[in-house]
Image (tube, rainbow, N blue to C red):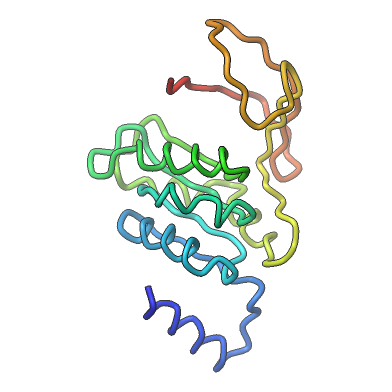
Length: 179
């Protein structure tokens, strides 16, 4: 942790790097390292892209304002997808608005399709530390509630709202209930 922090500060001091546009990403163990970096050095990064990992849910409140796009596969045989699910849930409960992409398949090595997500790099490079996040793709549910968290015992639910992704039209949105 401290070595990465020291390396980042060394690079910042020696090169003309925009300190408001530092991004961190990691895969598997590197994904765990990404979650660790952003919870320990909360003011260093403009955005984070952890993959196939999970974070410390007790520290979620530290990073609710950081743009995060997390990726994982439901059938990951190396790192259980529950790590991402619980971390994203903790962030949302704390008031954050992370983007979460879960692939139905792909096992552990989903980083090639993840990094090839059409809007990902545009999203990353639109983030700057200290500036409001674009938080796209964005889904806004307006009915039955606009609240970030809504619990119901219903088996069927009609939702209404809007969706956008980097200026592109969305043709479909799907949910999976992890209750």
